Amino acid sequence: MVNAEIHLVDRGTIRADLNYFIEGYTRGSAADPNPDVEMGTAPVYNLVIDHPDGTILWDTGSHPDAGNGHWPEELYAAFQHYDAHERDLETALDDSGFEIGDIDYVFQTHLHIDHAGSLHQFAGADTPIFVHEKEIKYAYYSAKTDEGGIAYVLEDFDHDLNWQVLRRTRETHFEDVEFIHLPGHTPGTIGTMVHLENTGTVLFAGDTLYLRPNYDDEKPLGSGVLWSKQHWFDSLSMMKELERKHNADVFCGHDPGDVERLRSGLS
Image 1 (cartoon, rainbow, N blue to C red):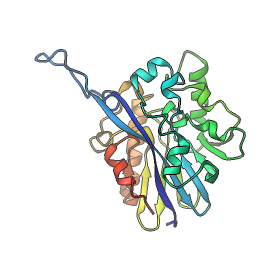
Image 2 (image 1 turned 90 degrees about the horizontal axis):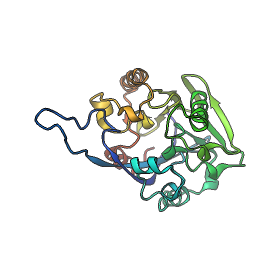
Image 3 (image 1 turned 90 degrees about the vertical axis):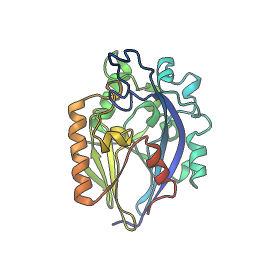
Image 4 (image 1 turned 45 degrees about the vertical axis):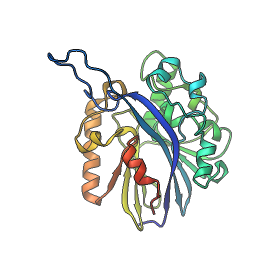
């Protein structure tokens, strides 16, 4: 168990059709063939892991100009991050007691628009940026061709960055901090398991889990944000096993209740 602290970095809120978050959230029926779609809001957050080996930023979040043309119009219409400018990385870090210059390492769960948009803050620096091999390949494939996923913007990650490429299913680069490959949402999505001295084991699933029903009720993400349902269920099984083995507390990537639990910090 490591003597480290984990701090929430509040990056604001996205608004989207809940069918993206939970498969089949709104369904028609013979009695109600045209049900109203329900829009929902979900928090966007990063973390700072204040670790004896250095200060680790977990995801860099949306670009501050997400709503001012940085995101493609159709993506912003689907996933409106209406306070991205007000909750830019520098402001959010400052509210959590940190500065860009305090960050020794960056860990990217994946490279979607609401997770990798502030990597420009580390362009030209020596700060190691951890990412999975399958993710960086798929991100470039998607951004540079008409194939792949739609939620990648080349300008988010195509910088002079000190990439540290992860290749295995599980890798440990810091004491009691393990990076775990959890494909499904994207090919290279990674979660993070930390064994904390006081709190115990915590598992941050990133966008493998958007909301609690994805985990508690085993309801998959919606097809629009799911690269592979079979990979997703395999990753879900792995997280359930890790929870049982380590008595881990699992945190979802966009769940309001989980974010509230993180506000007071973990240690």
